[in-house]
Length: 500
Image 1 (tube, rainbow, N blue to C red):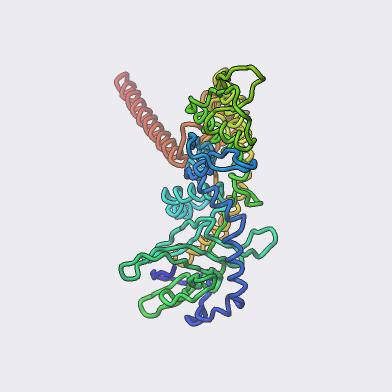
Image 2 (tube, rainbow, N blue to C red):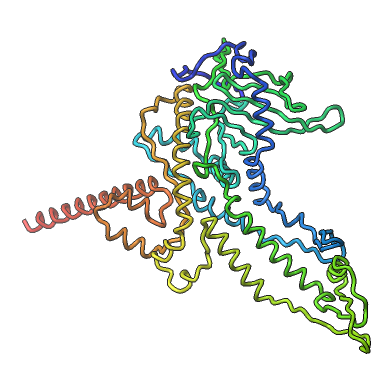
């Protein structure tokens, strides 16, 4: 949390604190009992369960893996059937949907635009490839859990870094009803430590406020001050002579929301994903029940209790019946055929419904095979664009908060004051396009600025680099023209001199 780094002056938004302030927990959270109640409520809350479910389903830990084959037993009650096929087929369409949406929105690095070139270089240093990987992970958290969290801080080497926290670890307490500003937050997480030669799992609790970080252990539903790791400030400054403790003027936890309601994607499509898994598993179960595809009808056998009848039918595929007087006993068969087309049709409906409810797109859409023009492509992407626009609105607000911390970092380390600089963050969506049509449109747009046309060009990944190349090419052409003109004039002079 705290770090040492060369300090060149604090901004007015960074507050100096006394080392002993954070030792008094009552000044930050006056009622620990209230905090303990909130932690207990969050750990057992439905909201957190959905966050964990989203993460589990993405990783392939789905309900189908816990499924048991049940039959109707005595008295009509369900009981487990251990001798029947119990396949657990998992077709993880949900994971595909999440990856599709994350890569569509965040697959390409963001573009930063600002008028100050020096400021732009500093931002590009911070928002580098490592940050792009972190941002993609936060986008995945936002989809699976409804919200992702970014923690700007200084590491042990004094570097300004951006760290991701899983959504199910964070309990935010908001200042406003719209849930836009964090008043303080609690992080609860588990770590493994060794006590002697025995590995022990302990739950740690960190409380983030404007006064720093308070450290606790979670023991039997209560907060116990952490004696190993004392309360700390966010920044420790060492100028070679004195050591100062500093804190941000804001709580350094930045929310990245999937939507304003923080509803995870899994809530939209869980029943459809489960339906796909069940259909595939049932189909394989029926295909493997060879002996039970034929029901045996036994003549001149006594009837039996209905519960026992259903149980024997499910387990043995046999039916006991009584025939009329004078009839001989015998065996008839009733064959039940498994219609694969029915399963295929239902699976197709489930997958289509999952794409529509999850607002994804079908890469095998018929429109792409028959007529892949730009209008059909845009129509195919219309649903995913709805979510992408909502995500971008939320993420743009989060970047505004993130830039506040970045600007304070630059000011506090003597790299310049950029609070008044305007920054435009562009999310480069990974959309399939008809490149020929786009290039033709750009060529027919002479009144659009060159930089804007380059930004939309399908073959341009770095606009500033292309502008530099164009300027260099123009300069070389001008130099070539000047050299040619000078040579031509010299030759003309020589010819005139000879004629004279």
